[in-house]
Length: 204
Image 1 (cartoon, helix red, strand yellow):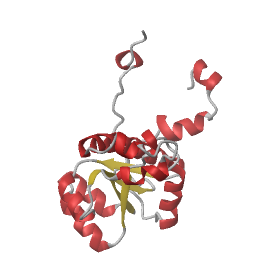
Image 2 (tube, rainbow, N blue to C red):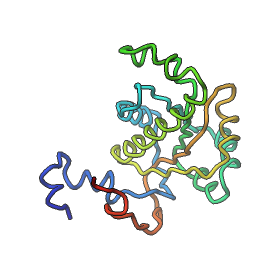
Image 3 (spheres, rainbow, N blue to C red):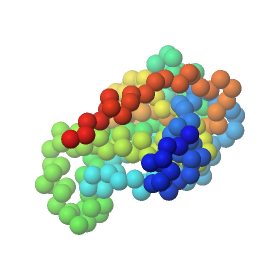
Image 4 (cartoon, rainbow, N blue to C red):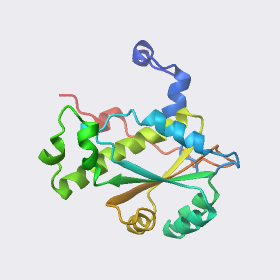
């Protein structure tokens, strides 16, 4: 049930909020319904508008389609996640590009010097790439839900090995693997508790 503050300020209806947040769950099993390349492109065209610092957009991804590619990925997942990856209609490997700064003069034309002023050192680029890629991954999970699919995000895998296997020769760090599809039977684990507002926020 929506509270008074929500009903007075919301521009989305309760159904949309349920779809994106309140009733959305991490899916652990999927049907055989396909997730097409057009679906994946539509997903990116939606979530690319989410904000990042300096409009840096460090997210990089691999869509795992072929059986050969899936066979390369599955052994690099934790054992508890291998079956999920093997059976999902579509799998995305999402990574942070530590060389995002090379595109900043075009992506942030209001201050093209940001490339050298703020991101000349790799350590600074890596820290920023991880934070902003994580933001983009959050947008992507919401985008998956908005398009009528379920998401199964996981970071239970060998990040170094996945980065080497799928982003060879690039300064890229794999952060999350996301399964996408229509939820199948027994897709959901029991809902886990969330912290209260008072546990998370301090009003000063």
